[in-house]
Structure formats: structure tokens, C-alpha cells
Image 1 (cartoon, rainbow, N blue to C red):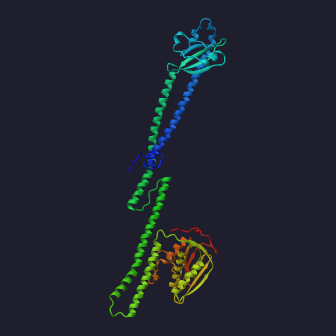
Image 2 (image 1 turned 180 degrees about the vertical axis):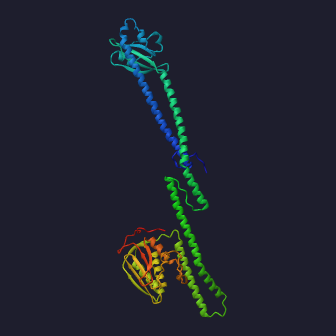
Image 3 (image 1 turned 180 degrees about the horizontal axis):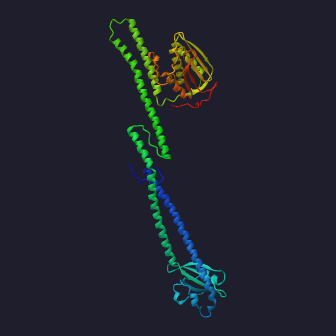
Length: 481
């Protein structure tokens, strides 16, 4: 394996490597500092540029005004036959150097200032010739810049030239730049501390929430998290609480399912073990008929266990296999289920009245739900009784001639493992009707238990659909659990 240089994205802000190698607080602090630093830099550069331009403009205006003022009084003192006379009135310009530019290109300056006076040129000559009203420009002299202004002297072919050193102004620019730079650095440092304070204070609820979630993961105690305020962090805590409530409910249902399953499995397993022990310990005292009776009892108990285990697997499965959802005629499913249940209860009479009703769902699950409804009616109907089956407008109603359902049992008949006092002596696991409700919820339907006019039980299953075939779409309100 060869190791190359680190990737550029490992340290560039905004790249995935940089993003995940730093804490949120450090990113907030750094981004805040960068944002404020860039803002301060832009403002500082703008202020510096505006001040420099304004100061230069003020200096130019002042220099030109002084030049015009001096030029208005300088004409009478000029003696161009010998040399220009520069009186005290003109020399009293203060911090400037004074010279004259003639129209023929010659210029005259005081002897004491000749060595350091800027080299004049074409702009000043144009002013002397009357081609320009004034000129102003910067001319360096021994690495010192001078601002040179030229204005015409009235009544002559001469221009008055004033030159002012920019050295003091350059020093002021330097001091101004240092002040702006120092204040800029101070602002960036202050922004960094402010960003750190904001990140620390703003992320404190996140850290508390993180600690609470880690405590739940470590202890598996699904207690609600504390909710403070009404901001995004509070909404996140409420979402965690809803998730914890769902997990707590799922755990409670799982524990209840295990407890109920162990209770329901204990009786058939004990009976099966007893019968097998009798067979293994049998001697010549057990007749062939008794042995056949024991074998039939064992087969019935095995069938009951098989059905119970299948129902448990169906109800306990968290992620059921993806069903084949299609448009099916509920009337055909009812006819098939009646044919199957009629074989199990040959002494019963089935009155069937169905009309076409197409639903979108999983045919196997729907058939099992309808079969469970019919099996329940067949179990409670006496010999020679009648089971009335009616399908109209999406509502399947199954009635029997049994003793009916007590008022205290009506709200619980579709609960898992619920068995009334009368049903405990009869075969069954208490899961058949629970499966009916689960299939109904998956198909967007409902179930209901009431009393029939004949005194027996009336169980109703309503599924959304239409009298004609429907498209292959999931029904409104259907669940996936």
C-alpha cells in the first residue's frame, strides 16, 4: 500500500472530509469567524479606499484653490525680461513649492528650491499656452511623490505651478491602514469568541438530548426525554419521544405475545406429552381401539399446535413478506372459503348471498381472514345449525346460531389470545379473529362484532372497493404493518 499526500478536500471547509472530522460547535465557530472576518475585510477595504480617495480629492481642491488665489496676484510682479520676481505674498503659500512655466517650455523656480522641484512637462506647458484651464498630477522627486498643480496667470503666457509633497499624506495612509488592520483583527477575534459562545450555548440542548438518547441506548429504559422550549430542538425531542413510545408499545406487545403464546402452548404440549407417554408405556392392557383413539387425539393436538404456531408467526412477524397486491373479487374468495369450511362442518347449513365486490389486496390473506370468520361461526353453531353469509357493498356479514357474544366480551373478541370463559373448553388459540382484524387493517377496512337477531354472533368485515374491477393501487387507509 502506498500513501500519497493528503487530499485537498481533507482541509477545505465545506468538503465532506472536513465536514465529518470536526464537531458541529467547531464548525459553527469557524464559519462564524470566517463570515465576520470576510465582512470586516470588505468593510475595511471599502472604508480605506473611500477615505483615501476623499483625502486625495480634498488635497487637490485645496491645492488648486491656493494656486488660483496666488495666480491672481502674481502677474504684476512678473518681469519676464530678466527673471520672474516672486514676492513674499506669493511665497507665503506655506507648505508648497512654487514655480513658473512659460509657453515656450521653460520654467523658473527659486534657487533654493531648484534641486528638489519636480520636473515639469507637457501638461504644465499646455496650461501656460492657454490650452488647459488647469492641470494636476503626481510627479516623483527622489522617491518622494509630489502633487503638482498648474494654473494660468491672467494676462500672461505663464502658468503658476504649485508642488506639494505627498509624504505626510502617505504616512497618514499608512497609519490609517494599520488602524483598520488592527481593528479588523480585533473584530475577527471577537467574532471567534462570539461564535464559540453562540455555538456552546445554542448546542447545549443538543448535547443534553444526545446524552439522554445515549442513556436510553445504554440502559434500554424507554422513558420519555425532557422537552424544553418550543424550538427545533424541542420538536426533535418530541419526535424521539414518539419513537420511544412506539418502541415501548412494540416491546409491550412482544412481551404480551410471548407470555400469551407460552400460556397457550402449555396445555396442548402437556396433553401431547401425556398421550405419547401412555403410548410408550403401553402394554397388552390397551386395546387396539384405545390405541387408535390416542393416535387420533395426538393428531388433533399436533394439528392444533401447527395452527397455533402458524398464527403466532403471522402475528409476530415485524416485516411480513411483500404480498402480491392485486384486484380480486371478494365474492369468489367467500365462495372458496365456504366450500372449505363446509367440509369441516358437514352437519351445518350455509346460506350464502354474495354480490361482486372487487378489492385491491393480497388474495391469500383475504381468504384466510374470511375462512377464520367462517370457522368461528362453524365452531359455535350447534349440530344442524345455520351459518348465514352475506356480502353486499363491501361488507361481509357472518351470523351463526350459537349462544352469541356476551356484552363484556364484544370489545375484546378481536384481541390476540382473548378467549371468553365459554370458549376455553373448546379448541382454538384465540388468534383467528386477531388475524381477521390485522388483514382488515392492511387492506384499509374495519371489523365489528355484534349480536345477530337470532341470538347468535354477527361478525362483519368491511373492505373498500367497487362492484367493478379496480386498478392495481393500494386502498386508501391501508397499513403496511
